[in-house]
Image (cartoon, rainbow, N blue to C red; front, side, top):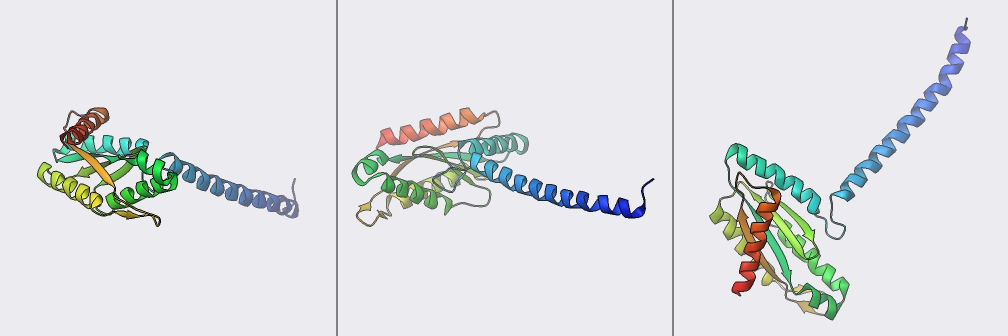
Length: 192
């Protein structure tokens, strides 16, 4: 039979070990949260990446199907990023990408999402917005980006973008709505 003193002595190392384990678990949780953030965030611009964007688009498509509200996808492609990289260097190209990201996020409402989904491609989800308002927003963003040159110190770069818009339909999949927005963007580029 254990005496009270012996039980107390053996409880102290267990309490210290529990504290150590709690500290390790808390550290692992912070590391996991940081890794999850990295898995869903673009490494260059502080925006969601394609994976996070597609997950949010799935949610909005389901909401459109369930509740019948309107929403749109806005596909943006930078014009001439390769020539900026070739002429001014990759740092200037990165500056252009960050500039476009800031321009797009600067126009966000709480219900909108913007992401960088590829090298020089961005997408936005314009939730709870009808087609006329979505088109007006797209035109205003394209105009603002194209008419506000970026000063990189050694040069001023006029950034051009082409955008396509597709309204989300209740039967859409992520790929079907992105495909329509991409085709609309190429149609805009061909029309110039």
